[in-house]
Image (cartoon, rainbow, N blue to C red; front, side, top):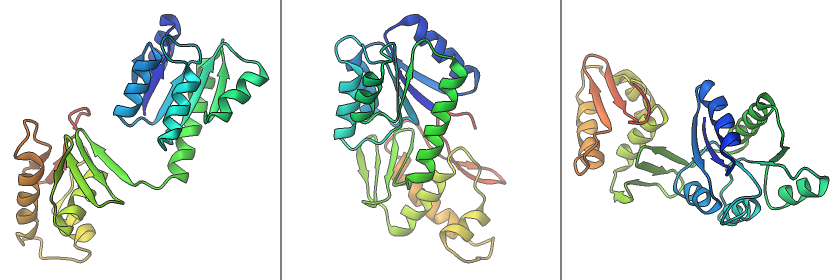
Length: 228
């Protein structure tokens, strides 16, 4: 999971961040409300943990702003304000859960796991993102670093399959069976031709190469933020 933590208390932030990192997750931390809202808008997260009382912009205003922009990322409020009315206020503006301080980390972790799992079940995937490469499945658009990529229908399907398996080696057989929907002669060069065309479109104008060939095995869409 990639968690956005918006918390101005250094001791609480360090405690939460260490707990998630120890369990193998990634935490991005913001110490002010303005910075937190900016980070929430700039990148996709599996969940957001936000304090209510923050410098520059309070936590409830952050939640309200995100919900007004149709951002459905699971949000848990972590706050010293723990009265029933405080919880109601948090849930009314769009928070998915509310946990009062002081708190037990395992309870926080379990609540976040439940929120993420529920979102994964209830929300169909409409957008894929690997590094600065984005695929909008509804608009049928691909962009890299904000630049629109003109893809043919087969190239779009090929990129979608690679992005859904980002960081994994995808064999020629897997591509033939899942992108072309039927079996080809494994020796055909149709895969090489389409991979070459796709690579020209998503990598040629950029410093970081994402679509790699793994000799003797297949191909991998590499996410630089994750180890192969």
